[in-house]
Length: 429
Ligand SMILES: *Cc1c(COP(=O)(O)O)cnc(C)c1O
Image (cartoon, rainbow, N blue to C red; front, side, top):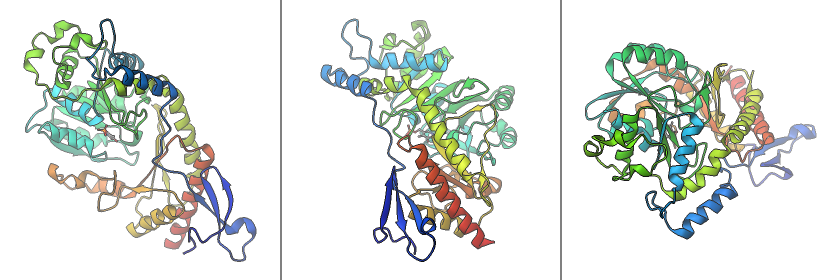
């Protein structure tokens, strides 16, 4: 193989890059093979303001959200107030994870044992997992070439459940106007999984604010990073009160700043079990400065996304996922389609890019690898075959775009993808 890393001579070092001398007789500039050396899993450090705030919490030791000194407002309560204001929600609850937020939203809406919940065939394992956590069963809805939920398939299945757990998987937002119209007409409540759309919007409405409840994740690979964590937002006082009780507020809900009036808890406090999953003050302290800069970060993700998209556009055999005008994106990951390619050829592209340091994730692999599992991997949910979606899932190739990548890094990644896809495509022809 032409990529004996460690044997080749490193000619040139730039940001996250090196060049490998392939030898041979080609002119100098064509003998060099670009190798990307950045890490697809390395996020930026926590901002200094977050580190300082975390140190203050560690020094006073009151990490539990309800452990406050007289007149003290906890970091957690402040975080909730700030997040609610950011997305324009009446109520916000911060919790231990995005998965916990979704399960709590479902419970607060009354979903329980034996119920069916509609959800995406193309999503991540915590989404069907949240449905299973409440004893319910996912009914999977297909995916389109836009990588969004298939609204025709959804329409056909709306009579099978009272709730849709809608995943804006990889940041792709479907036509929310049509979706909400359909769900409202059918009396189906919508819970939005915004793990990949914090900061995004559809038609000016922040992601998570069209449905009854919006759920977000603050896990390291999402748009804000507290290691683990999540949010749930809603305008429904009843749902908010139930969620707060579920998360384990004991009878301390009055210490929240983004909660409904105490009257909303009158009966709910007796009716709702405690299923602990609170956020703590240490994580909240880390998150608050990150939320304050989310807009800037989103723009930086989008700058990188644009470079990647421009760089691979018009590569023969490769389909770029076009983003609708109504969608305000956060390009924290990038997908393209190798539609109707033979599995071996896609594997070849993944291997060749991998050898040059570009880690592609393929959602079509028959066995789930890392986070690329899909509906037919979740056998506990007894999934039915979905051939139309299978064709699309087979072609989805994905990369993460951490903000530690420079724009030049992204341009290089795009060049490598373009070159390797072209080589394999031409060999197939
Ligand atoms: C990360 C993620 C979640 C929630 O994840 P947690 O790890 O539980 O915070 C939900 N949905 C999708 C699509 C995700 O990627």
